[in-house]
Image (cartoon, rainbow, N blue to C red; front, side):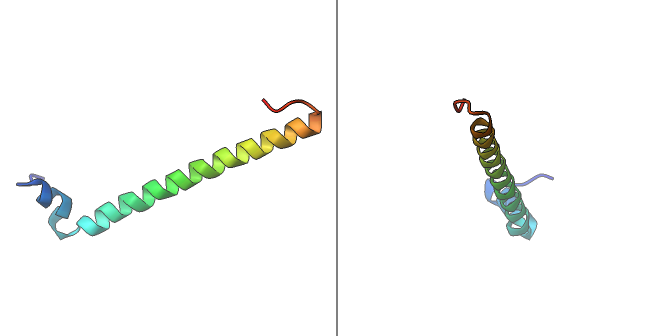
Length: 57
């Protein structure tokens, strides 16, 4: 598609709210998933260190 201005690009022919909203929801979901994975990894490493009596890396 060819848009005449940046505002027309953002508006996406009247569907901009749905398009950009979808991107926002997807990005938020990915960020939350990554944060949960990092927290789960840290918790698992701490548990393993306690079980083996080793210092936390």
